[in-house]
Length: 166
Ligand SMILES: [Zn+2]
Image (cartoon, rainbow, N blue to C red):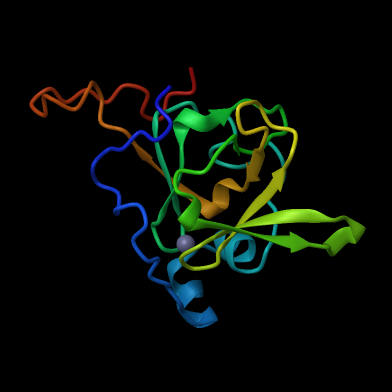
């Protein structure tokens, strides 16, 4: 079906990734202590406490640190884990993975390919077709809600779903 939904605002596929690097002090200035602990220090938020674990709002999840578009609500699914979970990345160039052997487990860590922010981990038990489950921290993400409707009319400002918990 539609594998890559392009909203027209994303960088061209294949364009070189421009790295973002900042000092710890600079990150601390830009992030909340919780965001810093998780995104810059590899922490994990407690299950069911994050901002986005149960969010169904359509949109793009961006890196909290550098704003890179990392995940789409289209691949978000209910994993029951208490963390926002995705079956695929938006752009493979913007999410990097590396082996994480902490806690005596062998896991695959998912990081922002632009600024190396810790996002969460990848597990091979997600839904098809990818079979992957990106188990992420809300604190590492910022949801940019998609424009309501099909984007044709900007005069019609409907803000459905904003902040509603249904
Ligand atoms: Zn980033």
